[in-house]
Image 1 (cartoon, rainbow, N blue to C red):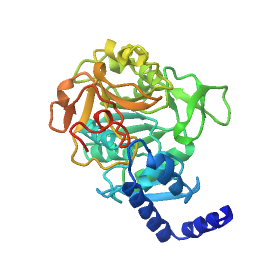
Image 2 (image 1 turned 180 degrees about the vertical axis):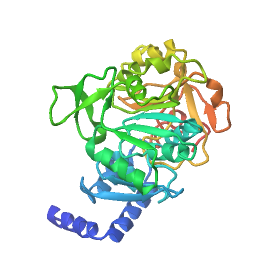
Image 3 (image 1 turned 60 degrees about the vertical axis):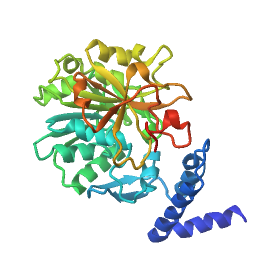
Length: 353
């Protein structure tokens, strides 16, 4: 069969939303049927098939099981795996355990700062949790398209407590940056002021300018700039237990050299020096149904880190007793990455799937 005929067939499917939805359901069923050890079916087979059904400017709508509505561009693995979710209406958009722990950490929060808010996959859930009590989410997203989608999703969900900001969180408020790379994988580099640049701001100076004296939760997913943002928040890092913010941040081997152990990295040392307790959060870098599973946390000294370059989220708190709850489970000597096609002893939830 010629490539032209295949492309024509795909085009016919994409012309009708009901056909596309049905085709995706069949691909997901095929994916489950052929699951096998050592083969990442989603990345090698089923995912690329679904990618062929969308272009970058396609806006997709998905509704969560709790009624939260998201609209988003089909431009990333986040979008693809959300589209392919099982069940059709999941309880999260991206990273199930990250979504759950953020909502739990945000309970009773008044001030939340998010760096790398994207289209609101986590910001919307946090804002929904804290709006009734008057809480505010300060959501920083320099990507204009994604920030516009964040604002759109806030309106879709009748949320008035998200402040969408274009700056990049940094260790000073005087630098110009630009995004380098595509969409969710974009990193930053310093540049002269120009049409593609954006200003930096520190968490400390931003909150001071808005008369905010304490922050309850800081969330950072900014492709290697996490330590720069934390250096701009040292005023808050040094506050005592009960006042200092809880922090969730990403580390990735491309940006963080953990050759001598994660505890020896500059970002971990910064937080440890301010008396934080650090854990890796075990999670799926996807949309994956983990309803009913405990949130598994690995103490920093017992994280399995071997394997190809990868990233995962970490949690830093000054009061580890907050995890003495049946919703959480402290585990050791396992990987933070849930990977269905890898060694179950390392990459599946403790106790099995």
